[in-house]
Length: 500
Image (cartoon, rainbow, N blue to C red; front, side, top):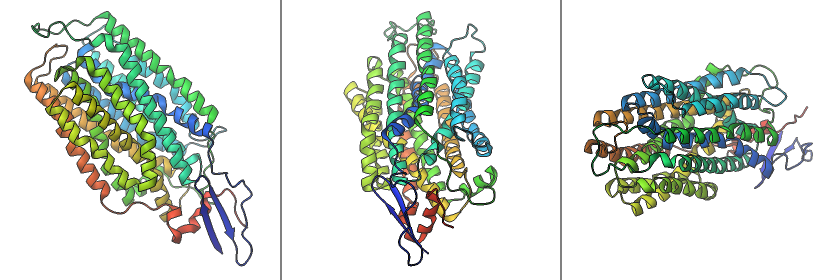
């Protein structure tokens, strides 16, 4: 039996020739693998709330905890570390339960997205609420940040794994990923813009720049009110966007399931995936790259506030980063398709010399140039791993013919490892502020704090990005079925029919 696979630019079609007979066309439309524009947009919208919330927390949560809630830097370090670890630990747990869940009328992944929506909206709002007591604020924010991260993970894992359930066509999956990343970038921009504009009045330059008082400044009621309003606006996006995702996207059943027998258990599947060389290389490289991006985002606002005279440019710098990232995402998708994914990875290191330049010359013109270039690098660093993961899954399926659910294990374990690396990087770096003598609520910090902030936005991300890229460039890229003629028989799993 001879099996021939043909993949067009916008669709996936399979023709089967048995013996000397004429090719038998599948009993479905030749464009069955294509996704409509509406489906891609709705799929992208589903990922916006998490990105809006993540953007707000990445840029402003640390500043809020230090200067508004006035928690000591050591406690802030524990809050950030505990939250990230909680989100990381929730990844394999979510993957385990999703893997064991049965398919419902709306699919196997969609109910998890809808079920997490109301709880994550409430946890996010309480994360920015200032409780009336001051002695246990560290415990309050630690509890709700851990809860928010765990719920966000429980939503993100099935949403990300849904990529494999949209269509069996690799090119269409890449297109859907590009739509998703563009919408998520727009969500990231919206989060920083909306949250930043609403709370901008809470972080005006202090009138004590020339003569700083000895103690921390009192927290104004206006600042707490602004943060609560911003939190409520972001929280309302969760039910709206999840509803559009459910209405516009139909989850397809997994056609790769074997005709008989059960799929692998979660632990057995996890053992196989972490030993798959392309996956292991991808995870290790982005452990460093994603941690570097998180450190850069978390300390940029603090650097502009306390290590340079850029108070009035904080919002403009943040928006420049995100606008650059949003506008460059379609360009990076074209580069990715035209020159390959490994070649596109070099775009991540573009920000390295500019980050060092900002630490050395912290002026407004330099800050905006650095922000624009950083946005370019952030865009490709977010797009690339989610574009490579489906290829890794396909490469794994070519070598191991197992049942459904493994894509959930790939996605959940990837997010687990990257979040764990981010937790360590943010926890250690925030603790370094405590050792440098950071004073919560003070309008002027010590010189050691200024030097520490310069290192955290310059030297630390540079070393981590270069290390991650060296690992990513080592070894060949994973093969996908359309690129491996010796394995074309495996393309039968992409069709929804069988030959007797």
